[in-house]
Image (cartoon, rainbow, N blue to C red; front, top):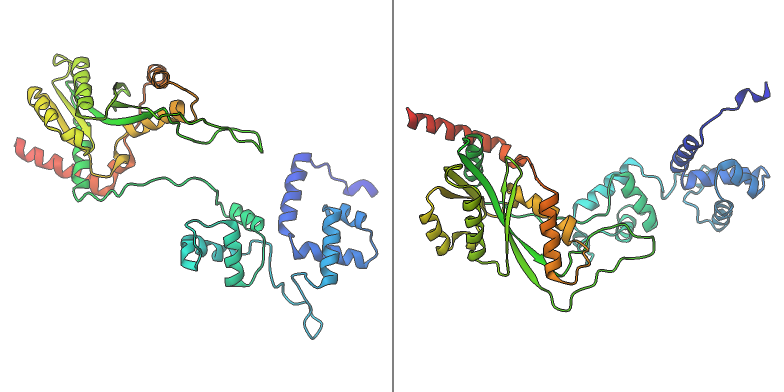
Length: 369
């Protein structure tokens, strides 16, 4: 029957099928279809309708054939030669692109630090002799799973006592009694000059974040209870040892000796945590002990995630004109969006750290015996 070959395909599936078809035959394969249909006497409109392409694609293929600029040619024996360039992501093209992306552009003579699609297209022409546009390279990178996004800063994390320090912190956490407490502390800069970040905008428009006439800053010191997610904090106009001592006093008042007989404060190696005024304060409060993190290892401090949340919800792209209003937003955030029950990072469960924790436990058992 004439209608026996009709298939009812949902429109959404048709769109997906058409996308895959165009991707598979992109470039010279589509041109071959167009030229053969032209040779059979079909009109451009009929060809475009039949091949699910535009009339401009038909005319472009015809003009390229007449000018001899198509990516395929006939050899001396009259046989169709392989294409001299390809606009499909073949395996060897994927390997070439991957190799380029692993090295900086400067290794290939470019005066730049990051690869652009145009630079990759130029280098592919030099290395492989293929000539493609920057947009084609952009499509290839998308097919390979690459996206254009910001890099992130990474600390050196090269403390020679890194494993021992991480193991001690984890050992304390695992052996905490109801009368003991461990807090992660750190400081955060809160500036009137907004941190600029991504947000939804209309295409072709860009949101403006005004800069203040004079930038102003306050500094926040925070302490995170990893067990409950409770956050204590205080704000100062300077990032000094006095700010840290204020935080210690706040901890002392919030957790009196009747509730917590011993308090471990985990801090980084910033100088205000080792100041003489801090040492004198610790001497007057023997139930407090500062445990230091490895140097250049912010990922070992879960309070960094709390501070990242502060930037995302309060300081990024903010429109506040007065610093006190911005500080008020931060205070409201801590009041309404907690607690922050973050788990310990994977860095504390690396094989070397786990082995060191077991060694600490074994040594304590020997001392007890």
